[in-house]
Length: 424
Ligand code: HEM
Image (cartoon, rainbow, N blue to C red; front, side, top):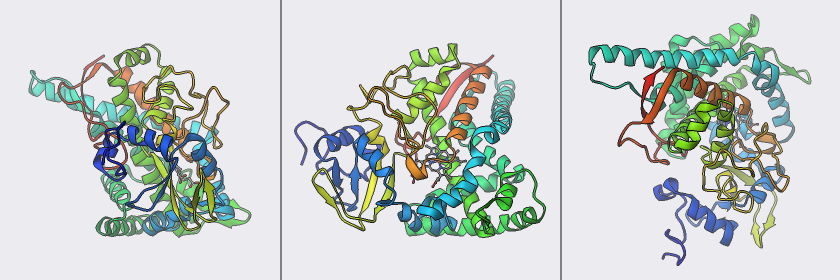
C-alpha cells in the first residue's frame, strides 16, 4: 500500500535500506500522523517530535537505559551507557571530567599532532606516487586515510597505549561495534574480540594501578568518588566503550561534515575564507546529518503520549534524527545551512537549549547520558578540518565518485570520500 502524499510504503519499513538512504519523508509522516508510532516489525515505539524526544530523554526514571545492558554490557562488560540512577551518576562523575574543560584543553595539541601526522602521511604517499607516475592526480579517500583513523589514534594517545598496536585497536573497534548488532555471529565476534582486548589491557591496567602515570587509564585507576574506586573490570569495560563511543561516531561525523561541505560549494567557500565557521558547520552537520540518529530506552512505568499508552516493559526509539528535522523547530529542516538562525550554535548542554527562536541539535543525546565526549568530538572535527584546509587546496570530490549518504555499513554516513586536491 502506498500513501497518496508520499512515496514510501505504509507501514514504512524502518529497518530497510530505503529508509536508511532517505529517512526524512517517513520521519516527517510519523511526526505529522503518528508521533508515537509502533513499528509493526519490531514492536518498538518510535518517538519523533523534537519536544517529545527532549521530554523522554529528561525522564530517565521512566525511560531507562537498562536496555543497553543486552548489547553494550554483554559485549564490553559493565557499561556506563546501561546504568541508571545513583550508580550511573557516580561512575559518570569519575570519567566525564577527563573529557571537558581544562583537562581536554591540555589534550588539544595531541589531537592537532595526530591530525597533522595523518595528513602528512597521505600527502607524502601522494607525493611519492606522483614521482612514480607523473600523470596521476593527488587524490585520497578521506574516510580511509583520515576520518576513520583520527579518533582511534586520539583515544589511543589518551589511554597511552602503544601506537604500534593501532591496527589491533582498529580491528577491535570495528568488531566491537558490529557486535552491538543483534545478530548472533556478530555478537559472538564482538564478545571474543573484547576478551582479547581485555587480556591485552589486563597487565597494563594492573601496572598503572600500582604505578600511575598521566594517562586516562591511570586516572581511572586512581579516581575516587565517595570513597569508591573503579574495579579493574570496569576500567577495561570503559576502555572498550570509549573505542566504540568515541571512535566510530566521530569518524562518521567528520566524514558527514566533509561530504556536506563538498556538496555545498558556496558554504564550503565561506568556510575556507573564515575558519571560525568550521565550528558552525560542525553544529549544523550534527543537526542535519547526525550519524547516530536515535537511542533506545526501556519503559519502566506505563505512560500515555498523544493518546497512545506505552506499556511498562516496552522499548522506545527516541529519534534524534527526526527531532533534528522537526519543522516546528527548524525552518526548511532538510536544508543544510550553516547560516541558519534557528539553530543554537553555542556550547552543547546536557539539558539542550530551546528558547522559542533557537534550539539545539539533538545529535549528542540529552540528559543523564548526554555524550561524555561532545567537546572532544568537536575538537577533533574542527582541528582536523582546519589542518586539512591549511594543507590542501582546491579540494573536490573525484569526478563520478560522489558517495551516496546512508550507504555506510554502520550509522548513517558514507563508506568512502574520494577527493582530489592540490598541495598548498
Ligand atoms: C560526533 C561524535 C559523537 C557522537 C555523534 C556521539 C553521540 C553520543 C550519544 C547520542 C550519546 C547518548 C547515548 C544515550 O543517551 O544512550 C553518547 C554517549 C556517550 N558518548 Fe558520545 N558521541 C560522539 C563522540 C564521543 C567521543 C569522542 C567520546 C569519548 C572519547 C564519546 C563518549 C561517550 C560516552 C562514554 C557516552 C556514554 C555516556 C553515558 O552513558 O552517561 N562520544 N554519545
